[in-house]
Length: 305
Image (cartoon, rainbow, N blue to C red; front, side, top):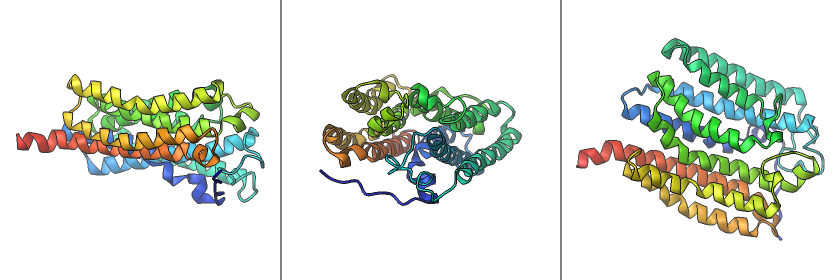
């Protein structure tokens, strides 16, 4: 049975920069639609991207803090988030960094209000509340709402908010384009909850996956990661997005690897750990290919025709 290498406690692991494409891809999807509609502004786009990254970073940091203070992370199960239980970092450091990320995001939001108006405030408030209350306050992670909230907050709200920031209006096309990717983002969190299934059970963490059987959680993981393909196919067939978006189907290669790995997870610790990285790869590649396909469909294909 393959072993999982321990991670090194520190700021790099606390911020988890390898997770940031979960925020980058939805912003890019909203941005390419704004570009096609003639509302694209590079400086505003960069600020939206920074805001999305800060919100994701805040969620990562506050999750580490929240799991620690609630007793979810212990010496026995801290292999993925060892910063606090190992004593290498102090709770106030992690909490302060997370709150600082939220504060900077709020400051960036004042630029958006100046640029496009007060309507953007609704998106900002939802984003900050979502990032800040994952394991603190409402702590919706423990109420089986983590995956569903991530689907809407990152998969739907981020592309819609990105477009609104540049255009001052809600775009149905941006929402539809972001919808298939929303399932792959949800799939990442499903992998996280399934990987931590038994330790969360011991800590009485009521995640969505934890309320299923372990095999049920694995089936749900495979299903939610696969949902992006039929949703995208329908969007293409009804003409809601360009046919070139079908380029994202190349990511089926990643889904195949994800599925094969998940079949080994019950008996192999390495495969169980890889539930999350495999979902990360799938999310990143699917989203990037979707954005590229959209740009080809709206910019290159019309010229060729």
